[in-house]
Length: 253
Image (cartoon, rainbow, N blue to C red; front, side):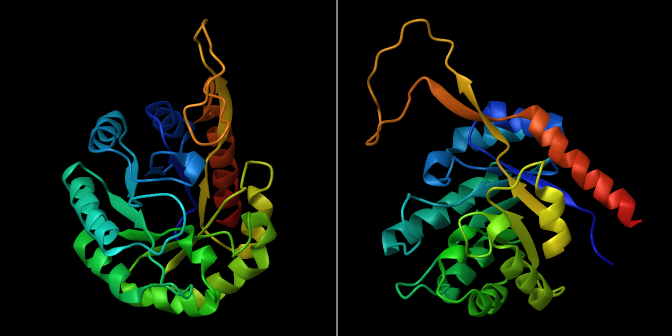
């Protein structure tokens, strides 16, 4: 029997964590630096988030931005970060490891999955950067991970619905497929209708201006970022997404 629909919100701030819980999400993907696609959050952030929410908390394990072909030193750091996440109250972890030829690094990913046990593991959108999604599906299953987050190998999930549908059909009950990237309350029903996924990943983010009265035009990063605007999960959008999923679940009964 298929599980009920569930909504995961990626959060890189406490404000987003609180908005996700109030809006009705079932799970949080906790990370830092969503501008880089999500990096490992600090131990302090994990513990503060854990104390601030009662819903499931999955922690991103990604030591840097860029590609997912990590060095031996970064692999060691990922192991340490998994230990920190486990000891800080995480309910699961999110990770991905690729080889130089664009395949899933089965051995290293499996080692991290074993280290994370008994916590479940989501293989993140590194999956979408692999050379062959069908082969990568089988490889991720071999690692023991419980879930794959994917946009179907395209920039956003609504563009990859056919590929996601194929992955769902091929995976069967062996692993969960979660659709993510570019999903919001206006398109989520169509994505689900086409793909038959039961898990949705979204940021539900909206710009929030800084309250600072004094502002200087200086960027703190390597790119010209606006230091006085940040993006935070919008509670109303989370609630709208959760409402669509509830409606779909009710109609399916």
